[in-house]
Length: 74
Image (cartoon, rainbow, N blue to C red; front, side, top):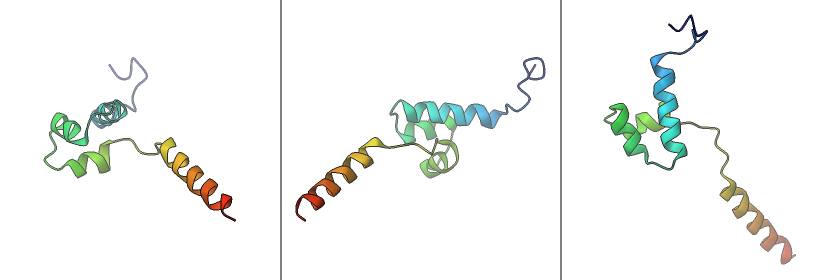
């Protein structure tokens, strides 16, 4: 089936990672993801399955405020 669809690269791990990444993207907790994937340890779900390389724009906002405040006093 995978060969017919040219999806030879897809594994069960691919589906599990996709599910965890989707749950994370929708704001569901790592605990919910761990429960769905059958992990006893939430850290397993976070370390192995949940997407990384996520840009958190709120970090940029904090840095902008700090830099703006700091340069305003100089």
